[in-house]
Image 1 (cartoon, helix red, strand yellow):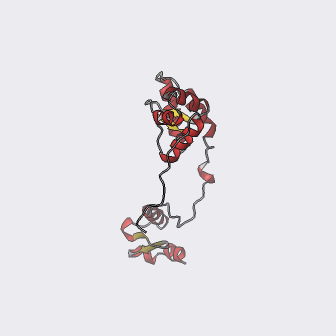
Image 2: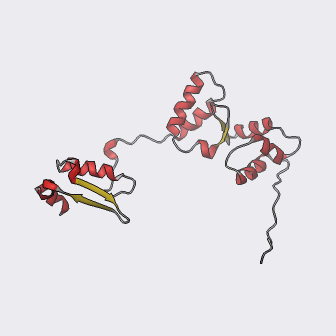
Image 3: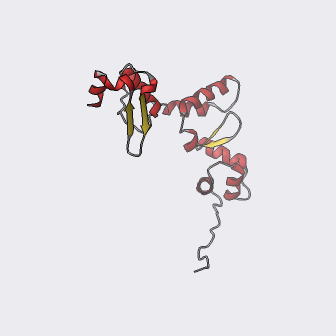
Length: 173
């Protein structure tokens, strides 16, 4: 079987901004209003596409003038994006009100530090943090505590006088 039996499909969404946008987004991660306008039909302008999508909060204008799809804009560090949107509005950049409103609606509640729990051995915590914790817990020097991440967990080596301490024996069990 050396022949390619798959046919290349041609994108076509004549007459519908929503269909053209969906087709374009299925093929690309970015947003290009001119390309969406081409998919929607010959008499469609990029300005018409942007107006349609912006009215439905499907795209957001960045302070630098670029347009970003909502699923990308309303994800990630939304607190930083909100601060940037407020700063852009304060600088007189128009069109940031929708951004600020959408971001403010999805900002998660703050979690007080005392309600955050971490299981020892969590993979997202760097080995250096475990080393610092054990060093402070045992009142040891940094050169006597070594934590190495292995395939299935962490290996802890406690050396010097610290290894013979009562606290180290209690910690190791």
